[in-house]
Image: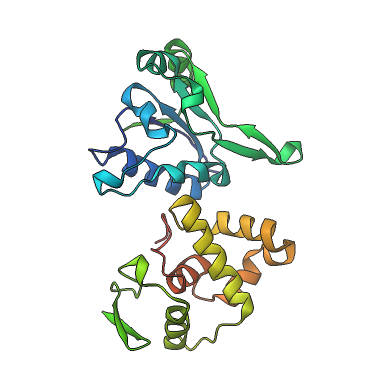
Length: 135
Length: 110
């Protein structure tokens, strides 16, 4: 597609309790279906959106965290997690879902999609985008 | 709206998608297909079963592009292309196959 833009989706809220996380995920999947260049950021309480072992039984809400595993199929493989946000919540990358993609240019090798970056690096990444959407 | 399957009345939305995912049984697909003058063969079923497994794992119905790629990987290259899928499901592989599989309309599908 000739008219590809760089979209960055910034996710800052906990997954349940508000509709932001799910709405963001839907928009992300739609943007990717239209073959845009999509990157994601998880910062602040947003890091909980991709935490492992979510159980929403008691909440009576659908656990949509398995859907993040489909991002690789949608060619979304630039997922940035803010280091400071993880640290402030006592989390490490091992507490997050293992999100991967298959690299077409490297014999479909499975690679990690998640990159832990500092807030300074994040600022640079944001600077390179055409569109930044905050959820 | 609703459809009749095995003597039960199942609620659907205005486009014919099942209102409740758990109402699905294989006969639902046959009844929906008959309403659109389609008879399901094993090639249709391969795609329908694939979509149900995909939904089970990821909780979404995949976009057509993703479906095409994934079908190619699982069922072979000759089936992983839009021509093959559109011949099976002329109303659109995402829309029509997801409907028969009892899933919601794919995200991003208009």
